[in-house]
Image 1 (cartoon, helix red, strand yellow):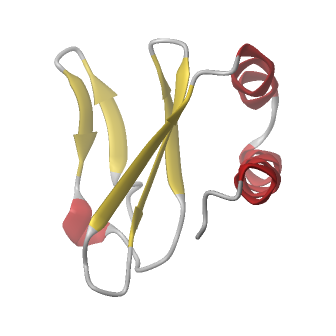
Image 2 (image 1 turned 90 degrees about the horizontal axis):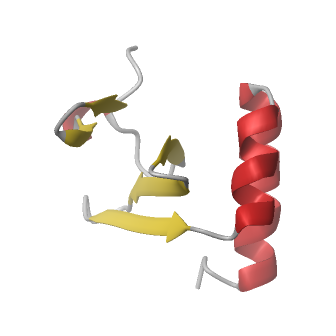
Image 3 (image 1 turned 180 degrees about the vertical axis):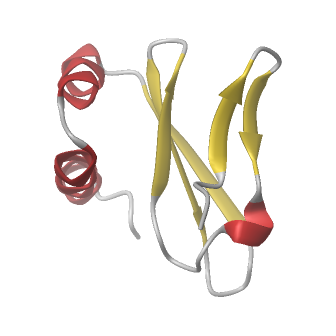
Length: 81
């Protein structure tokens, strides 16, 4: 399946029909980590992280490590409640 988040010259493009429920998707846009997920009610949730430390770390990591780093950040900031 194609990744449902892409960056184009107009901005971020989301293909929500390709998103799995409760799966975290992300991209880096304008020096921010943008997080997206579709909940069990099919509602799109969006968050942006502009903390330089996290953004710089995400830029340096491989895909699987990025997800782990973001999950730790979400738990630390208590964003999943």
